[in-house]
Length: 118
Image (cartoon, rainbow, N blue to C red; front, side, top):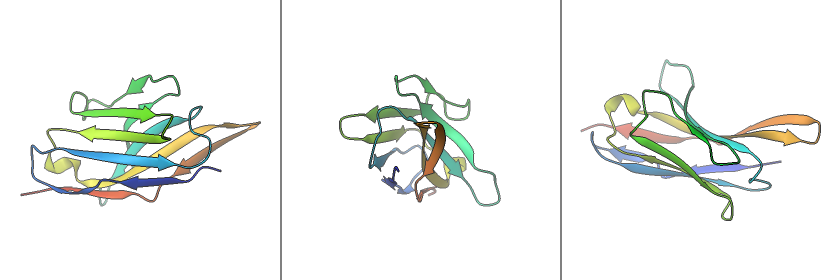
């Protein structure tokens, strides 16, 4: 079992920066980690992912502005968000996925609100 707790959300002006953190309990280093976001009335979408080996992936909407990283000693994942835009406003969710024996499992955090506005 893995529990995920996000922090670092808040209100920021357009062009500003935020860093989100996701603290994980339990086994972490073998898991693929990701950040998703969901705006009101929209589907949840992938923001960034990082494999257990450190390979990262971003959609075009955030590429060059967001950076995902992980610290396997601290069992923590981060999302650095720069040049924030109003359309980045959403609830951001931490996600972890991996195999536990013969079972593939997916875990979610409770989400943290990011609001980009004047």
